[in-house]
Image (cartoon, rainbow, N blue to C red; front, side, top):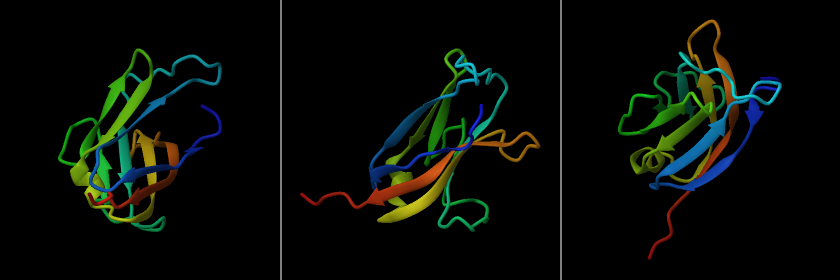
Length: 123
């Protein structure tokens, strides 16, 4: 996969469920072999923040913040954040990253950018 990380931004209403699908392809356009890989999606307060845990962190094990679903056949990674997780964001823009093999020597940042959140509209 050349030209990584992919730069991408997204927006959601704070307190709502958010999901995004990422299809991972090799340089020749074929689905990447992601068998045995681990994935992690993190949102931090600032780009220089390295505190653990980050503001939001999800992986393939579901938590109150969400989960990552991996389809090795199609090389698709789906990130799902729960309303509980996005409620933590309030209004603002924060850096996020989707990592493959985070914390390992082979760690690769696949996607990074800004995660924008806005308050939900009052009825």
